[in-house]
Amino acid sequence: MAGVTTPVDPFRRHIFIAPAPKTGVPESKIMVIDFDTTFYFHREGAGILFGMAPGPNDDGSTFDMTVQWDFLPQVTETAVRRLPALADAAISHAWAGLYETTPDANPIIGPSSAVSGFYTIAGFSGHGFQHSPAAGRILADVIAGRDPKFDLTPFSEHRFAAGRSNPEHNVV
Image (cartoon, rainbow, N blue to C red):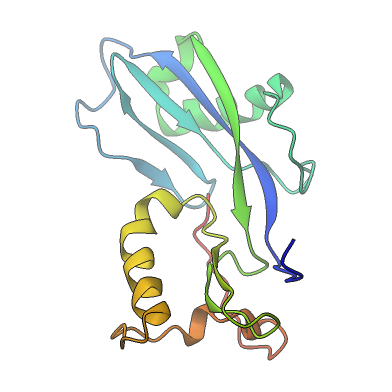
């Protein structure tokens, strides 16, 4: 609407929840991530929330948030290797949402070169809620003309054309 092209695309991610088995699952609510497989889990109420990034044959960029139940066997196969207590767990519910992702999986934060007075803060690859307080404060300082005391160069919209992007390797 503002005439700015932003390289951010939506990618579907799934969450599955199962009742917590009585044994073999940590009591801690700390999120555990296996970066080799992208499988993750943590306690969620009386259950276990888990998921993983889709494989190389995923459906690509999409706004479709329908749960793809045919993805569950792939997740389950990995889940029981990483958390054997899930082997007999039944899924109580699931949902799918979207990651807003840039080509290097890092956000774009800063002023637009195409439209004066337009600023972008997008593309956090699932980390927006975690990073929004700090990122919002930094961008507010930039907009207000204050030194944010943070180098935004790695998050510039120009990094892709300039070949300066540094891909995030640990995105789930």
